[in-house]
Image (cartoon, rainbow, N blue to C red; front, side):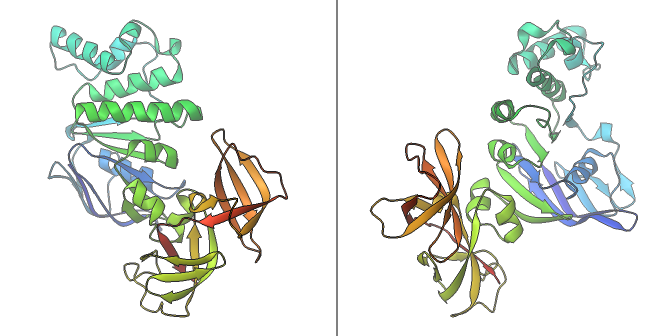
Amino acid sequence: MLALDRVAQSYGRKAVLKDISFQLAPGQIGCLLGPSGCGKTTALRLIAGFEKLDSGEIRIHGEPVARAGWSLAPEKRQVGLVFQDYALFPHLSVAANVAFGLSRLGNDERALRVQQMLKLVGLSREAASWPHQLSGGQQQRVALARALAPKPRLLLLDEPFSNLDVELREKLSLEVRDILKHEGITALLVTHDQHEAFAMADVIGVMNEGVIQQCDTPYTLYHQPANRFVADFIGQGTLLPGTVLNSHQVEIELGVLEGVVDGDCSEEGGCARCAQGCMVDVLIRPDDIIHDDASLLMGQVERKAFRGADFIYTLRLPGGGRVLAQVDSHHNHAIGEHIGIRLGVDHVVAFQK
C-alpha cells in the first residue's frame, strides 16, 4: 500500500533523509519512531505531498506519487491526515467538521457517512457540540473521524497524541488501533514516544539522523536491537562488559549467557572479527534479572522506582557493574539492602567495543 524507495531530502546543505526505504502492506499499521530532528516528520510530509523529495520514489497502492522533479498534488493522493493539534474548525459543529471533506456526496449520503464515523469513534451524542466543548481525547477522535470519512487509501498520523496526558495517550492509542483495524485502513504514525508506537504499530522503523536504523516488529526491536542506538532508544537496559567464548556463549559478571548472539556483534550485524576472547558490551534488560532469594548472587539496591505493579531497582553488582531489575511490587526492599538475583536471558545481545 505504501512504499518509500531510497528517498532522500535535504534543506540546503543539511541532509534530512538519507536514502530511506520503508513499506507497508494493505491494512498494516506502521510507525516512524525517533527523537526530534531525526527526519520522521519530513518523511510524513513527503508522503502527504507537502514537500518535494530530492531523489528516490514514493508509491501508494503501487502508483508513483513522487519522484525527483515530479510530485502528485496532495489532494489527488487519497491520503487522510490527523495532526498533532487536531486542526478542527472552531466555528463548525462536530458533525460539520466530520462532513468537511465530503462535499462531493449528496446530502443524505453525507449525513449517513458522518453518522457512521461518529458512531465508530463513540461520539454520536456530541454531533451538535462545538470543538471547544470537548475534551482533548474527544477532539482527537473527531479529527480521526474527519480523516477517515472520505475513505482514504492511506492515513497519516503526525504525533497525534502528544497534547494528551500519559494515561489518556495510551488508552486512545489502543482505541485508534482498534478503529483502524476494524476499518482495514493502512496507516503510518510518526512519534517520538515508544509507548504510543508499541500500542499502535504492527511494524516500526526506528530513525536517527535521517536513517532508518532498524525496521521490525515491536517485540523484535526490544529483544533483538540491531545496534546501540536502537538498544538505548527502545526500552530500558544497561550494558555490561563481556567476553566472547564462542559463537553461542558470552561471559559477563553475572555468569555465562547462552544463545544465538544478536546485535552488531553477530554475523547478521556484519561483524566478521568477533571471535573467542573478543571484548563486547552485553545488553541486559530489567526483565532479564530475576529476583531470587535462594540465589547466592547478590545485588545491592542503589535506587528504586515504584510503578504500582512492580519496582524498577538499580542494583550494584559485586564487581562494580550496575543493572536494572524489574521486581514484583510485593518485594519492597530498602536502599542499601542486598537481594538475591539470577539471570533469565532469552536473547543475547552484544555490541562491539
